[in-house]
Image (cartoon, rainbow, N blue to C red; front, side):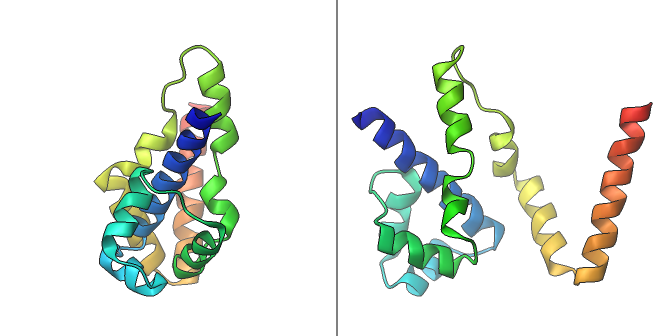
Amino acid sequence: MEPMGNDIDVHLGKRLRRRRRLLGLTQQQLAGACGVRFQQIQKYECGANRISAARLWQLSEALDVPVGYFYDGLSEMAQREHSAGGGESGGEMFTRKETLDLVRAYYQLGERPRRRLLDLAKSLNGDQETA
């Protein structure tokens, strides 16, 4: 059971790192918000240290996400591992700098421009599907 436990720790760490980077926070800034040293955030992000329930709650508050955010995609990960060899789906897309820059820019917009941009992106995707 330990290997799966470690996989969960790694998954939570990846989600933590993704959200922190998405918000443009340093490990030091996040650590300060949670009352730990930045080295602890490093250990959480690589899955070396387990995140306690209380700490997960603090992190979710600091990163403005529900606790469930950290577990998103976990069941899909388990299914991939149990099927033919696994492999990473769209998860690596979110680690690219271009994607992070795009998402940061999106969240810097006001609500109305964000909705308009999202509608535009959806319409462009729809154009590709009909072609």
